[in-house]
Image (cartoon, rainbow, N blue to C red):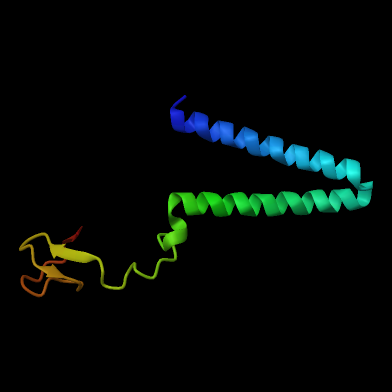
Length: 104
């Protein structure tokens, strides 16, 4: 087990313990029908909070996600594989080749 996997496993166990502790405390304090609704609500809120933290940690919260408007807005450079001309058209304007590669 790598260090990253072990850290992920430990974090999951910690959050499971926190969720279980909160659920037990709520079930002791509140009567049954109310405690069930509150426990489910707290679980959903805690899951949403953890997801938000993980998304921010991997960098998707900084505009690097699937719905990034920067993709397809001309920031990607295409080069012809035959003559190495940079273009964003279907066919190369210089040699007419449709083979292109993405460059930086």
